Length: 248
Length: 299
Image: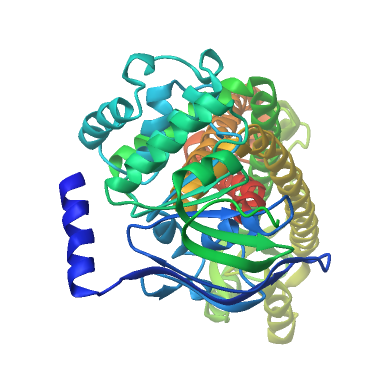
């Protein structure tokens, strides 16, 4: 898989062709109370990219993630994912669109009455995948996130890092081409946060486009990935390989 | 929809009923009471209709003949009456037969013998009408036809009118009761399932993010509603079947009631009542569950 990803990257380099997976075009979101979530934002995210969206609280990071999730619609502009304008999706089409996304939240959102295995399997079950598929995919994804020995544990028996690993496993078990993470390390200590970021990078290397909203300055600085900086809802900086801006 | 999804819905629905057992029980009791009263109303209305039909069939116009007309004239009148429109049949009864019939009801031969040789009963032509609504027309036709030899004409139109009025009132009351109870049931089921939905808000939320369709999310709640509705329908049906059977048996022991009217058999009541009750229970359940989950699907 990693080899394939590298080949795909090499091919892109040689041919110079870039595939835009997510296109945010002049998007503005005004909430019902009148406050602006994001203002006239335009971003292109290519297939296979690893992107940080940074900014202080209220800068519009989460709004952007929620717009990409189709949790709400922009007040103006459009968002195209894999060539499809998601603002025009019907209520019936939304679930099928979301199957292309993996989502990770700051608060993990695991089901407390289900084990690690069941939490991950749940994501497959609700999209009506068969028992054989589930029995094959779940152990392998749990091994990938390093939780194969904890598969029978309940969330309250896990550390924060392990809970987020479970959430990550759940997000990727259906093999989505895009992974959206909203402050995935917000509730974790620095060491654990690093482990999660390394896992996200590994997922990216396997071919998944990863978009992370975060304010974890140290990690962003050290990873030197593409960084999109938002301030008061506006895009103020977009650099291909950089750190967390000091200006924000 | 796949079989494994249905299996998942059923499993989740049972789990949920178990988790909110008290509220589910309250819900089942409400649906059961609703369906019991519906059954009662239906049974009452159906039996009144049935009795009305019996009365209608028995509805007749009695033409009492005076002593002056001869047997030939009676035969002639008999044939004429038979030809009248809306007349089903005509029956001739001698004074002796009338007295014997009356005597049977009043205490047997002693009563009959008390008259000695003197029979006060008139010869009677009983005209059966094809429908209660035509009684007056038939009477008018008889009056126009001839007054000769006819002492008096008696009809049961009043009885028929009373029965029709009672039936209408009972039907209206039944429909009202059913409507009110149906609303109460839906509200209660909605509240019960809302509790379940609230306790599983997190789960629904995750399902939405992972890409579960609205119908997949609704599935377990709909099945829960169906189960509550089904149990709520079957319990009153059993109770009602047993009590109706007991009522029929008790009625059969009172000869006066059975002579006057015949009640519908349990089989003929339940062949209608069972599917209607079960369907109603299931519909109430589904309606309650779909209403309560609607709000949570908009994520």
